[in-house]
Amino acid sequence: MDMEAAKMLGAGLAAIGAGLASLGVGDVFAKYLEGELRNPGAADGQQGRLFIGFAAAELLGLLAFVVAMILIFVA
Amino acid sequence: MRQFMIEPLGGTAGWEVAGYNIAFTNSALWMLITTVVLFAFVALGMKRELVPGRWQMMVESLTGFIDDMLEANIGKGGRKYVPYVFSLFMFILFANLLGLMPLGVVGVHPFTFTSHFTVTGILAVISFSIVLGVGFWKHGLKFFGLFVPHGTPLPMVPFIAPIEFISFMVRPFSLALRLFVAMMAGHLLLEVLSSFVIGGGNAGFGFGLLVGVPSFILMVGICALELLVAGIQAYVFALLTALYINDAENLH
Image (cartoon, rainbow over all chains, first blue to last red; front, side, top):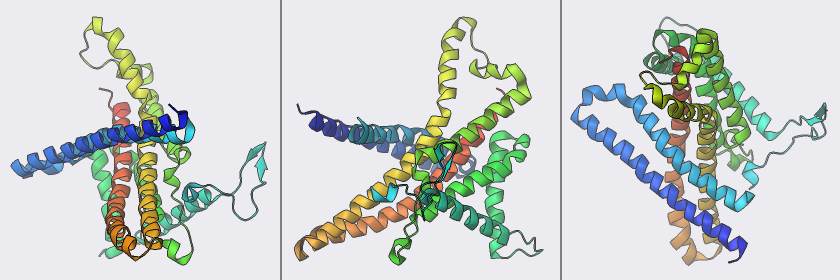
């Protein structure tokens, strides 16, 4: 296979990682909302943890984006 | 892409100090603008009126927000970090928001300097050095106990310590990478969508209706999302800095 084509395919495949991270981020917020509706009184104290979980899940998706960018522009 | 290009302004391209180029770039210009806007924003709310006006309320609710966050995450000792974390939060927030301003319609193109790894990297390194400084200042060599969580069985220490060490050393990278990629991806997305609008419009009426109009509607939605992301990323940066400082302040 042509090198350039392989890079582009790899960058496209890296987009799968971004999509999967979106599942993770959605899950973080979904579970938080579920817990919040069950016990609204305790919800406000846990918002910090919500964003820590969000940040961790999001970072892994952003790494997929970085892989795509490296394949297109650097490699 | 043009919007991410760093270029020297007004004939400063040749400025050098000890062989290093110190040209005044558009990146530096927008950092200066962000600082000035931030300074004005806070200064207008520091009149200490007995009955606070709207502006003072705005500034005070932001400082109170950071104060609460530090108290919740670090405890009583967290208050002394309010100046740093507040400046960090507001600087990133204002940089993100100013970079999103639609000033292009009047011919001024905003430059989002948080979409560059050098800038976010330096911010992360500052946070990380504060963590190291506080840790070694307060706990001395006991700070290395951070790599051995409380209650680890002795045979597990050689395995746990390297993992903890790596997860500690990777923090500045993940901190910087998150902000940089989130801002760059957002701006790239807006650029791609706007190129759809322009390309669809140029290709004729049918394409404009089929491609241009939906892309434009999506772009308006994504712009709103980007405003949210600008806030969340600034908050996450400040929150993680607070958590890392917590590790140094109260060694677990």
